[in-house]
Amino acid sequence: MIQSIRYSLFCYSSVPCSLEPIPQTYKYYRNVRDSWTSNTCGGSCNQINTFRLNPQYLISLPNTNNINNINNINHHHSHSHGNNRSNSPHTTLFDKTNLRFSLSCLQPLDINIMVFCNQGQPIHLPAKELMITSTGNYRRCFSMCKLSSQELTYFQKDFTHSIFPLTVVLSNFSGSLGDFEFRVESTHTLIELKKIV
Image (cartoon, rainbow, N blue to C red; front, side):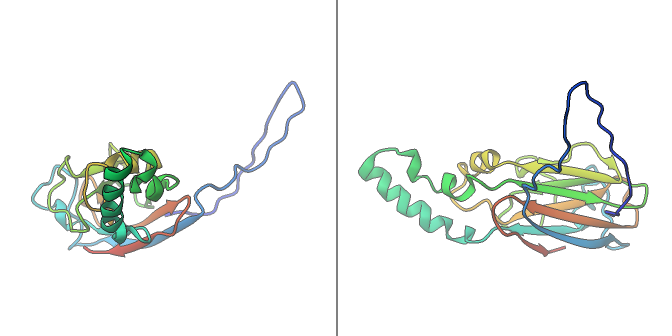
């Protein structure tokens, strides 16, 4: 879990210098405190029979439901005006949106985040063709991954429907019981977070 702690920071330099906080780029966020219970500790992605039991969340952005209508409009314009990148809905929808996902826990557990594009449906198997990012190896007590606007645009071009909502699966390697905190942050737009499993 995220906790406040006290620390001191020193900077030594041969010339005058100053320290100041980095500007906050992730302005919008949602976070939830939840638990792996006896019913929701499905274990690692290697446990294909129980992985689906892990906590799963839907991540949505505003107005992404309208992307099919935008696709149709831009498809019509592309016949009239040629292939103009400025007509692409993907550059207008995702050109500024960067997402960051983080997972933390107090127990000494090795934890992981996997983000899938599955049309808002629960994940039954950790299929690589559906996964668009993850935290990689299971990491002790804290794990984080990001999706840049360029990555969102890249993945979106392969779909006729919106890649949102995304399905996020949170797991720990041993399938142990424990509490966790999950946080999703965005740079330029509000986020909707909904538990589905």
